[in-house]
Amino acid sequence: MTSVLRRNIVIFQVLVGVVLVLTGHAAKLMAQTSSPTHLEVVALRQPVIVKLFGAGAGSLDSYGTGILVSQEGHVLTVWNHLVSTGFLTAVTADGRRFPVDTIGTSAEHDAALLKLKTEPGEEFPFVDLAQATDPEVGSSVYAFSNMFRVAAGNEPVSVVHGVIAARVPLEATQGRWKFPVKSPIWLIDAITNNS
Image 1: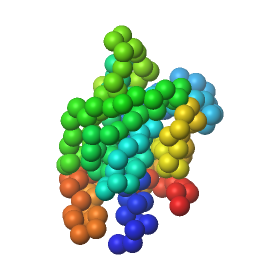
Image 2: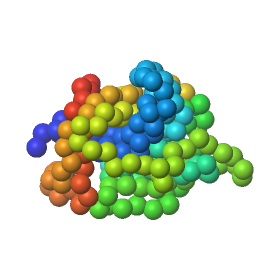
Image 3: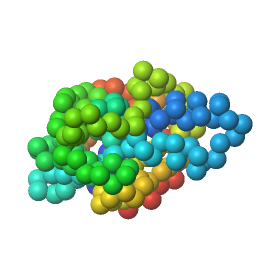
């Protein structure tokens, strides 16, 4: 497996994690209005996305994206390339930087729950996971990602619009090691530029 293919698998894992939660919210917005524009959907969801960066494999910085899932600053993200050491920083949509604590991880789901280190009483916009939906093949989706590795300030994350093409088990390796993910993944048919 080429390094580009491996990198694309990791990037799509990030995208899928963000897509699954945001799909239900975008669908609700579309149901509430006659025909929202892509800009309206993107503007509605950008505030709940955080850019993440910190120590990845070895001494290299790693970049990613997470979703605010609580008013108190809990963030859901992928586990495999971000949570390898104690140094991790989150940048919110308004450009504020926060150190991050790792609350829990699941290698089987390639998920990590993080917590922004904030002042008491600080509140954030968030996605309510209780309202998340299980999208079907053919669903139109938006994926928010830090694929261009920009975590400097309040610049928006990249947005990819696509369609869920399939729900399949992940059969992949990373280098010599089998990927630990056991849950199904959604393959997204979308045009990206992540070179």
